[in-house]
Image 1: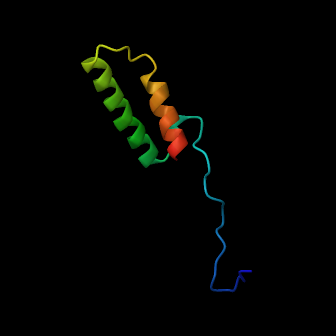
Image 2: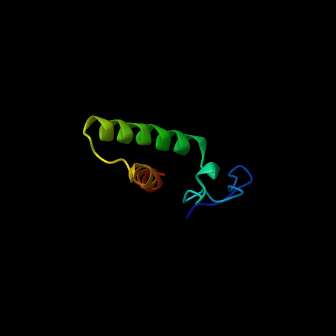
Length: 67
């Protein structure tokens, strides 16, 4: 069992385990990952004449599952 001494500090707040519902409140790296993935999906859709209607949702779900 681990013992806590004055030299082993306990974190003040627990780590974030889920992204907020509002994407504007996401950490910067999550927002950047979403933007990169969305651009890639949109490019693929254009190149393959495929609808891009759900690309934003797909990108958001992918980022939520990784973060």
